[in-house]
Structure formats: structure tokens, C-alpha cells
Image (cartoon, rainbow, N blue to C red; front, side, top):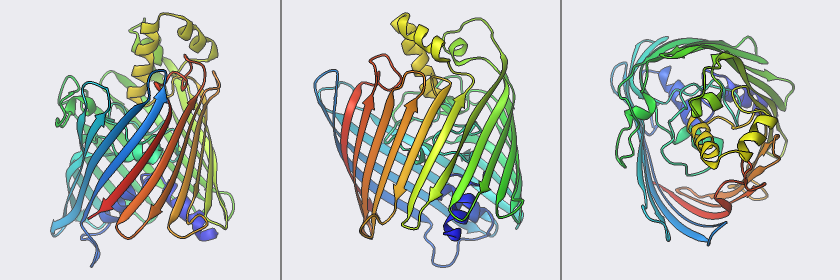
Length: 413
């Protein structure tokens, strides 16, 4: 159990991303070449069929996806990383079926010494120790081209990186890094195969981060980020090992910024110091059940009264606000709760069960998601169900699909 909990705190350390691919990236950053026998390529194809019900007639859809990742050395001290995903979507009785290509990463990495690394290109810079909401994940805004799953790990993995220059210095238990991401385009692109620089590089941005594991129990990180038209935002991440089975975490960001409503509806300037927070704990049992409970606060979102006023107001303003918040991946209201549970090898080996609930405190609406996934050597089979409950104008009740069932087959090459 202590090993499991230590694994959780290492995974939560902000120098790492919260998914296994980001962990592999940092490991590769600390070696001049991939370990002998490792595979530079990860390639899979995924087929999915889904059925959803909502306000209108039931909708049937299919999806075929191809995901490719290469991470390998081509010379002493040099690595190349490329990650791309193509989603071919077909929805019954819906015009404009969509093909979407997402160039997640494409960069070169130079390891000048075992402790110093420089990266240049499109990089998915992930930050944060929380699971459901990451206030310090400053480069997530506008990065989603297509959502294949509401699971937070999928949202962080299947998004566009930003073009940037990044430098890192690593040492035992810690790191310092700085990055600069320049403006390269004015507007996002709707082209199916566009690299979409306008979504991720519409303005100059920068970030500096320092992290140091103080002990096996404590891992803090400090960040500062800013850019054109944005005051500097301070960030803090902390993972704390409470006992052999429990990891507590807190993630905070604060600085002068406008409210979401003022930004979305172009209302008068209302910049003020606002905070965002995600805090909770993860408990892992002896039977491989991992439970996460998280409180989320978004100081730029609407409070209960403001949210109710917007819901009663013009539908156009309500829709614009929701779309803007979704683009930034910010909660529409100030307070939310998040619950996530995973049971690995549930009852039988290779069967994983996952459950997730998002709860809006202001309007009591809920998003509930379940998945059962069985692993073979090269094949995964998953069954997923999602249910959205709440009043028609509530956060999750307003989603067009009330119930969705999906079957997913993934084949690894």
C-alpha cells in the first residue's frame, strides 16, 4: 500500500503530467536514449459506436480514430516527439459529419547535459496535481478540437499542444523550467486537417515553474505565467502523503483577471484579483480501488445568483457564455464537486472499472460517466455510459444528450 501511495504522489508531482504519457516524456527527458528494448512508436486504431437520447429523436453515431505517437532518439542527445490523432465521425441524421485531425505534439528535444534539456516545437505543456479541474494548467484554453470522452485523462491527452521554446534543468527530486510561446496566428481554424495555430498561439505567452520534492510526503511546485493582455498569474501545487494509502492535493492560481462573463459578453472592464482552486484527496485500497474526491472553486465564474440571472435572461447571452467557458475549459459557476473512482483488475484480471461524477453546487445538476474496460495483449474493449441530469437550463441539464451509450474497440499495432 505504501508503494501505491508513493506512486500516486509521484504521479501528482507537478513536474509530471497526470497521465502516463507525460510521465514517459519526463523519464525520456532525463536519458539520452530510450532504454534498450523499448518501443519508440505507439500506434492504435479505435472504432466506436454510440447511441444517445435527448430532447429530440435518438441519435446513432460511429467513430473511427487513428492515434500515432513517436518518441525516439536520432542522434546523441537529440530526441524527436510527434503525436497525432485523426477522428473520423459519422452521426446519423446530422448534416456536416466531421473529420478532425489533432496534431498534439511535434517537437525536437536537445539534452545538452544529463540535467539540462531544451525543447522546440508544438508541446503539450501540462501542469497541475488535481484530477477534475486544473487552475495551473495555463495552456489548456482553446486546445480541444474534438472531445472523445469526458474523462479528464482523455481531455488532457487528446488536445493541441502550443508552439513554444522550453528549457528545463533537472535534479534529484526537482526541476526548474521556463517557456515562451509566441503569437503565430490571429484566429482558430475549422479546417479538418489544420494544425490550428490560431487556437493555441493567438498571443504571446510565457511560464516559469519551480518544483522540489521536500520529502517522500511533500511535493510543492510554484508557477508564474502571463502574456499579452494578461496580468501575471501565480500558481501553486502541493501533493502531500497523509498515510500509506492517502494522498491529499491542492492546486491554486490567482491574479488580476476579468470575470468569465465580462470576457464572454464583452462587458465593461471588471478586472480584479481572482482565485481558482482545486483541492481534495485520493485514497487507494488494498483491492486496487482508487477513490478521488475534489472540491473546485472558480473565482472567475458566476456565483449562484449570477448564474440564475443569466439562465433567466436572453438565451443568446446564455449560449455565448457557456460556449466561451467550454472553450477555456473553465467551470461556468464558482463551486463544483468532482468524484472519480477506478477499480483495477475488478473481480477478474485485466478488467478495469471507472466511475466519474461532476456536480454543480449552484444548480444541483450532475454529469455521471461509467466505463468497463477489458485489456487483452493488443486489444481493449470498453463499454461506456453517460447520463446528464438537471433542469433544462442548468449546467449539465442543458447538454443536448441526456443519456449516451458507447462501445469502443481499440487495437494496438
